[in-house]
Image 1 (cartoon, rainbow, N blue to C red):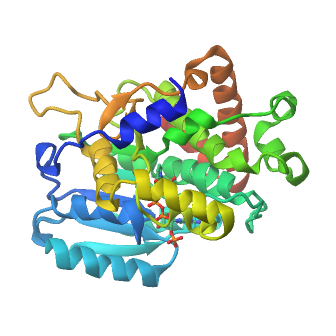
Image 2: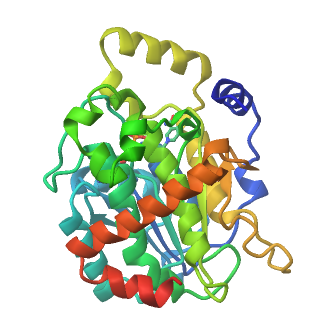
Length: 350
Ligand SMILES: NC(=O)c1ccc[n+]([C@@H]2O[C@H](COP(=O)([O-])OP(=O)(O)OC[C@H]3O[C@@H](n4cnc5c(N)ncnc54)[C@H](OP(=O)(O)O)[C@@H]3O)[C@@H](O)[C@H]2O)c1
């Protein structure tokens, strides 16, 4: 299906109400990464409304790169839901050392296990901006950092007891992965991620970079699912909220791009709450306490609250080759900057 047809269908669909998939998250530990604003904030608000009372021991961690903004989000969620077991923890996905510090803190203060992890942080820009770790910013935040934190939290997810929808890892992807294009130069290069990190090679393709990183998020889910042993309790899926009101397009707020994105949002964007609802659905729906539907979202693309096929490329023979190549490259990169990665891969994946 072309992206446009897919997009129009998804934007006009009525989403299920939150009450139709609400679960009891009392006593659970839930992390939403990138939850100070936008869809992450609204997804976190939905989770908080299901976490009972603070005395039941549940903890909602708002993982944000700006603690002050995170504290404002915490107050907003506390006021609207009455749940007060919320903490703000700092993490910057554009900084591998910040991710390591977050995981180390969780090991000490997290309570041993993690029930839900929603990797929601993301950005889009057509500028080639280099992070302090010397990676193109979208490649690092949307993919490398997302994968790094997911892997670092895998041991804690693996320790959670299997109850209802938990433990689950949700990677927030996008229908924009349908538009991903990898040039022949990139595909013929020795290393795909390094080629994409080459400023000269990327000069004419930055307009597709966001889509490429979202394709890699889909491939990350598929690669993890292929490697998680069947005995692992961890369920992994990809969420697509569809086009929603948020600050995602903050880098396109002026000039011709500003006009185009403004019109598009005016015509098609869902309210921010609905985006958060789609993410919450991917995190807690698709299970049955009576059994029979266990892990039914494992490896799936949950687009606007529905299990949906991914792009033809993602499931093609060529796509699988790219998936395997970027997995190998990813583990190689992460193992160089984080000595705990090889051990996590050998103990928790096969
Ligand atoms: N909105 C849509 O139409 C749409 C459609 C499909 C998919 N998505 C996906 O949904 C997710 C949420 O996006 P949104 O629409 O809610 O956008 P948003 O309002 O811009 O929120 C993005 C979140 O990511 C955080 N973030 C950005 N860079 C980060 C970094 N280096 N480290 C940690 N956190 C970082 C932001 O923090 P700051 O506020 O500090 O920058 C913010 O909390 C993204 O993955 C996006 O790709 C969105």
